[in-house]
Length: 176
Image 1 (cartoon, helix red, strand yellow):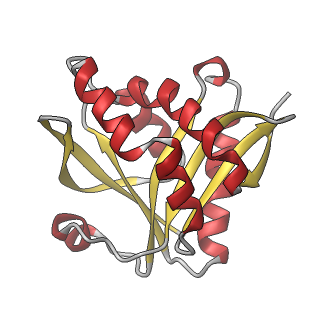
Image 2 (cartoon, rainbow, N blue to C red; image 1 turned 135 degrees about the vertical axis):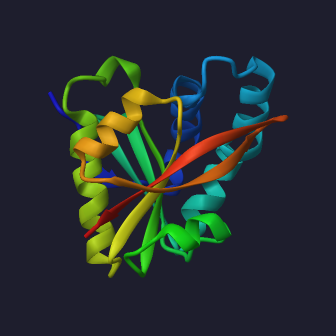
């Protein structure tokens, strides 16, 4: 059964942090150190971080909810891109950032990510975005294929700091 997509609430913060701890490491390059991953989770994907994200009117978190168990989530940020490399690459403005797009590994290959992506793109369009952009690690071939299949195209590159390592991301855009 495919979970239902709904907007996350403050009550979901703990479960989102738990899900992030499972899913974020899967998106990291193979050589990422466990310490860098742990620091990133602590600094950006903790329960306290999710409480802050959920209180921000410009951030929407959509979740795949299966009877109270969260199977995936996306984070949509409806703010102009602050990274100059990203801002220069985008063509569809205003644009919403798809900052997070993660599905529990038990749900990979079941259509859950496609369901969540479709709802995320619809939400951004409903909020007035002309496009959605994301950054994906250039070594994450599986995610890149999924994003291309979902209608995203490569428009640029940007850097991403994971702990003490600078990673290189592709910037991908979906015109709505």
